Length: 306
Ligand SMILES: NC(=O)C1=CN([C@@H]2O[C@H](COP(=O)(O)OP(=O)(O)OC[C@H]3O[C@@H](n4cnc5c(N)ncnc54)[C@H](OP(=O)(O)O)[C@@H]3O)[C@@H](O)[C@H]2O)C=CC1
Ligand SMILES: CC(C)(CO)C(=O)C(=O)O
Image 1 (cartoon, rainbow, N blue to C red):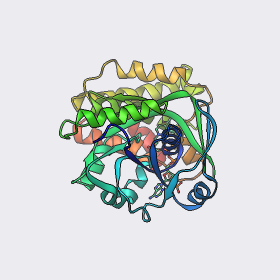
Image 2 (image 1 turned 120 degrees about the horizontal axis):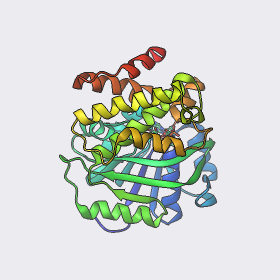
Image 3 (image 1 turned 60 degrees about the horizontal axis):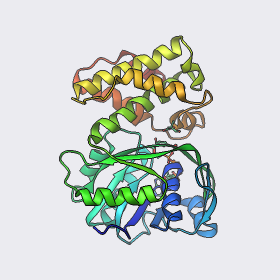
Image 4 (image 1 turned 180 degrees about the horizontal axis):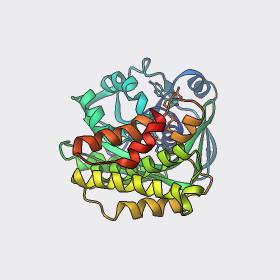
């Protein structure tokens, strides 16, 4: 794969995908967006509007298609849909891939890389996670908030990919203003993100409170700690070697958040919208059952969402 001129396909131009697409496009990379409905019509008609704390205000002309329309090939496919939409872009991934294409999912749901790999066995699927606050703020409009925009990605042990490819993507991301880390253990790094966001989203949704309530001592914080302890036990059983105590890490991160913060799963549930509850809550319980780990706090909160 060449060092530059990589063709990027963004499967899902929402808060995360739209931010990646806009940042890459601003630095002159070759980017195509997959979107749908009125959001797609607005991107086509008026460009992709970016409101960004890091980059300011921009209107970007980017190529945009539905998953079904796109007939081209891409060197790098960022999968930026929610967990419940992964199946809807499987055919796109198959069609858009050539023999050197790499697929990089950035979802908050642990196991997405291996899940997509099973769906598209002939394609090289990596794994990843992302640290950003981004959302669709209007038709064709993406808002990126705050100063953090960091993407972590890498290959699972069973996946063969050249270092040159990983570094070419890293260079493009860094040139675009996205902090890009090639992980030496992507299974660990995606698990750590999952453990945190699962505890955050599930606690917030269960009590219907923002994170300021988790920051105070009491039953809300105890629930967050219980969930973190249970996912940590699962991680250890899975053989994940954490760099630090995961409960302490989760508490450190939650305590740094703005008190009014809520996770997108909680926001989606409050709107009566489809949410990632399967990936962030029920998948944790299933994985724990498979490993023989008791997850009493997860089971208690799950009662509310059945
Ligand atoms: N937003 C954030 O700040 C963060 C999110 N994450 C994670 O990143 C992932 C993506 O989240 P986020 O960007 O917020 O999600 P969004 O819902 O904002 O974006 C997903 C986009 O993909 C579109 N989409 C889904 N399926 C298709 C399809 N088949 N064809 C065309 N477009 C499609 C959706 O369209 P439609 O609206 O029509 O369904 C939507 O615009 C999630 O796993 C989330 O947990 C991680 C860190 C931070
Ligand atoms: C980081 C955070 C909390 C940003 O919204 C997130 O990942 C989510 O809401 O899913």
